[in-house]
Image 1 (cartoon, helix red, strand yellow):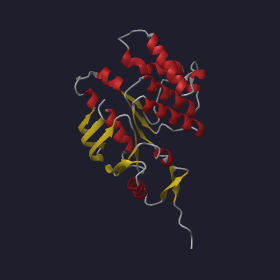
Image 2: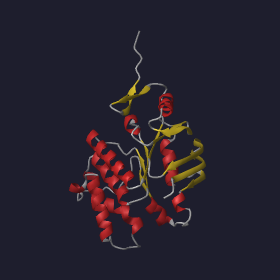
Image 3: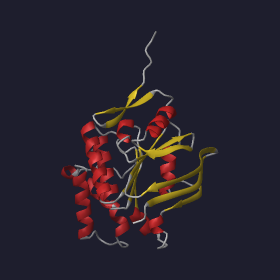
Length: 259
């Protein structure tokens, strides 16, 4: 397996007439979890969308594992799974059918789901603790349940690279831990995980951090590096502080005492 999962070369994105990303050059390591952080409006979701090929851009996005095969659209869809922020679904479909949509890249035209497809859907629903309400429609779910169903759909693709934009939205702390366990299992399977998270303490559990500001890469490095910690603190105007607690790095608000 290649050591690089994805490469962006001189990527520029404008939304409307507003430039959002400026000359992005970055490589994402394979079989690692990389998290993108930065203040509001930094271009985090836009960067992830460009990586997924969902946003018009200039420059190049390359996946080394696919360079030799000249992949068609289905091969690319099998290689890359996407969980978007506030992602919409067909509300009248059952959770099971929503997750089965993740198997489309593996199916022939108008073919029925195979036993392999059905097994992948079942396993994905069980991984996200959504199996018990697989027959309910999406519109019957709470925000957290809906997010778990959409995560299951992304997992059902069984892609080599998973891109997730704010995957913890609406998830309570126990299900955030469940999500972390899913990420851990994906990495054990040599999958690549690239996320955008606002939760800094959870972000610090990633292998690498990309710090984005004003549409440009400020820093990329190990989540345990003091240099990365300083970059995080600076991009958030030194209003957060990275500390070590019980052998884990955490982020806390930095409150100045009043005189």
